[in-house]
Length: 327
Image (cartoon, rainbow, N blue to C red; front, side):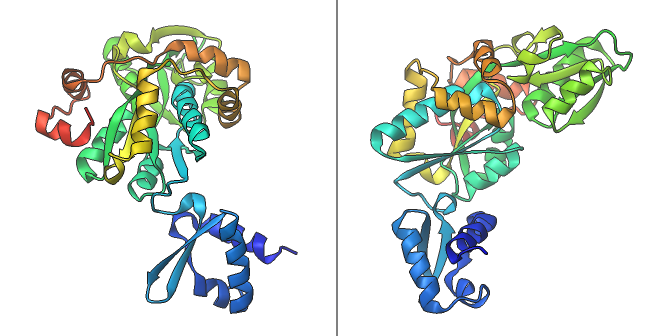
């Protein structure tokens, strides 16, 4: 039988950024007011939960890592399952260790969920395709893009044994752009969408489709002929960006982490390699080998962004860009 503590943590994790009113713990979970209050006080003292008075005497409770407010003792980063983020995650963890701040890293399956959590205040950083971030920021105005993560780290591969004139790609906008540029060069190639890169790689090797657009570290282990590198089709445009919520764009800790990533040659941490290996279900060797395919030092200025906006087919004025990109 689970203890009250275990039940509370499980329920709060399930609720995520929504949290739960304290009276619900007492009424819906069947615990007395004093028992619930004692358990919550212990969890709060241990830094596991956070409580905030909402109205009158009503209190809202969250697991601390999901509180939709800025916690100065915590930096939360949401990212996709890609080795592109190894340098930024290492820089963030270095900074947090030096400052005695807890770093929380959450891996997501799609960019939209990252940007939603960023806009609602449950993340400090969102790392995802810069195309998606740009459209989200232009339409919502509650996030801004602080800089690029990297360029490269993906490509178009071919299985000549396949008779299926299809390119498989993920719903990631960067991979869709890569596939778009590939079709412009190769002609009438059909596109199919995959959600699991490992299953897609297996299908590619089996001949289910002739081409695949795939990112690292899966690109390093696919064992096929690379027709086009990322830079062949996408020049030096960034793949992913570093997004923050508009209300936290001047936060000192966030700015320091971004500066550390931009201005120093970050040494990739072994615990970040371990984390990415687990998240991507690829070996540590594959993760390490994949890092050489990225360009982490990119220009980030108005002219570069104007060129990128034209490339993606969304030309914008300099005034609009200044509202979305922190230059």
